[in-house]
Image 1 (cartoon, each protein chain N blue to C red):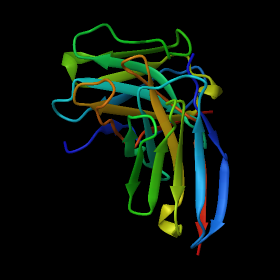
Image 2: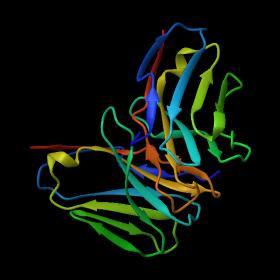
Image 3: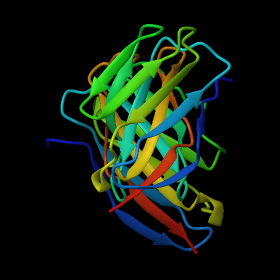
Image 4: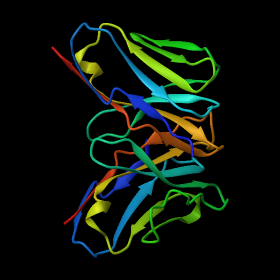
Length: 110
Length: 115
């Protein structure tokens, strides 16, 4: 069974700080995705990384896929209160089954 | 509709009762997923439908759980003889064709509380 482990589980920081969250597995994934979920809503896709070593940027968010395609990281520069939420990584186990990590709950305080 | 629609948004039921949760996927999407999310946790895969293919039921936690998808569109997740541990948010999602590389769109979920 492929598993995705995320760390840290919780992160509480002040506005303006930088942070990195991690998604790790012992299995190789063809791609990994990052989602953000706000209370009372479903997760929303932020990015998909496909190539080992790939780096993608989305405004202040930088996503990296490990060279061996077993891990990924999300770095946020100068966090804002609007970045608060649950960050989930996900990958396909087989062709169709999208599995999720347990998530990192981020709180950014003004 | 414009997005994935789920109903009811909230359901409180007594232990032992059956519940049905409904999902209307985005029009034209052939792939449909059900997930369960316990309070503050990640998403647990339950079941996947793709077109007319046999569904992937490998995530259903027990035989009290079942799901069907009629006419390739609306799906219903049924939980029989509910238990307190079934309390969670049940999320439905759809994508245009399923499989890696396709964007999955989630509904807002059905919050189930078993008392």
